[in-house]
Length: 521
Image 1: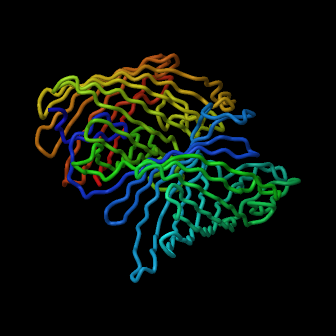
Image 2: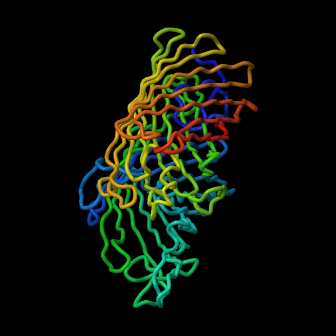
Image 3: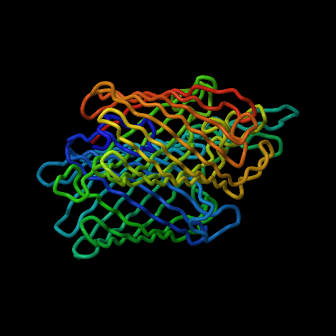
């Protein structure tokens, strides 16, 4: 019997899930959306995993990507890079006597140089069997990362450091109306209104003097608005494609506006843990905090993962780090990358499983800029042999697992990593030129469950690339030890320690410690 081990890897890229929990039934939805703006002429994509529990909680993990770089317009799925990633939590509270619902929510977004906090509340009301309406208020606080806040200019013969990019607070009000009287189509209209300002005082330099910046968002004012008309095709209970047309602003100085087109779909996997379903599945939340014992950088990784009865899997995750050493909290968090991954288990025999997989990782470029060679460690917060520049990495893989017994499994895996760097970010005055790169990764590992509630594992990896990986060589190795404790049926605590290279120009190495948890909905 395959994989009875009680293990969930501390990584989000988990190629076999090890236990199945009879949790409360919920529903998980995958959403994909492609959009294009008529005047900006840029293509972008958004991917989401949304899980709704039986007690009206909803958890959403999402990220966006953009295509084209520099002067390349009207290009889709080329030169892709990360935009922003986010997690949204909300709960529905029903008001008695059919008076509607209140839905408080909280969202955190991570971008290349900012963190955005967005608490809000929504009121939804069904007017009759065909019409419904909703009203929502959100407050958006955009906190600029430390490395992007300040500039230094010469004023009166002296170098003066000043706040150049301020934090922004914005009030957002949305009103929507929906019509469901057509069997095949759902129609909706949404109007958004924004008003904002700086929450601190940024400056710019003009004629050798500091001048306070004025917050502008549209047509030289602090206010903006958007309109959206959306049409959803009720193709089935599970699959619902949609199209929308929006009226959005073009820039902050003029009254120019443009059309934004969206096309996408929602796919509902059905009710989880349904033994009568052909697609029974379990949804998990993963979180891991990492710390480099030598570099002293902290990072976080979190997302949703769906296991389809040990036959297939799909997941979305967001990876962030703090650009300042020894900073644990939110003062300087930026995005590192966002990723989506999936795979399928082919049972060659009772004890042998072959798992092809694919991972797509998108880098926003958070923290990649080094203003001097003394600032170069900011390039090495993630994988030291990989640039943090905007771009993408595509990784097909093939894993073979041998389940020796109910408590012992061995595996080997090959992955091909193709790293694309955004065209307009390949040249840097400090780090030089960085082009597209390839890397081959070979993994060998073992998982062992000494007792029912514990699993331990060991993995060693050999990496071979067409560029310098460590110690001025084009090859490297990594080691990892993991321990996973099943605290209760729904919760697992994960520990890991990695041996990784610290610098591409020396043989110095670093221990990276990880502590995380996994929750089964």
